[in-house]
Amino acid sequence: MQREVLTVRQAADLMQVSTDTVYRLVSSGELPAKKVGRIWRLHRSLVQTYLTSSTKPTPELREETVRP
Image (cartoon, rainbow, N blue to C red; front, side, top):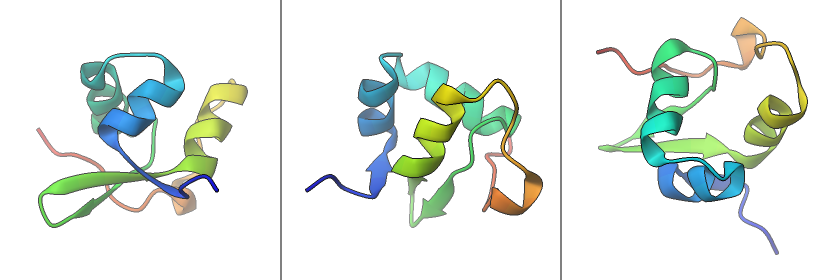
């Protein structure tokens, strides 16, 4: 069974990119994420939607974004 909630490392592995790229996408608001304690979590379905879509997820799907 696949995990529904991913860490940044797991999302990066799924997307085949670096963790820096995932943090950049979250920071820009392109990839929705939620901070739980000190660790960012991403929903697998939203990561897969990002990968298959040429448009950004709608604002109501965004939980929280990283602030520089």
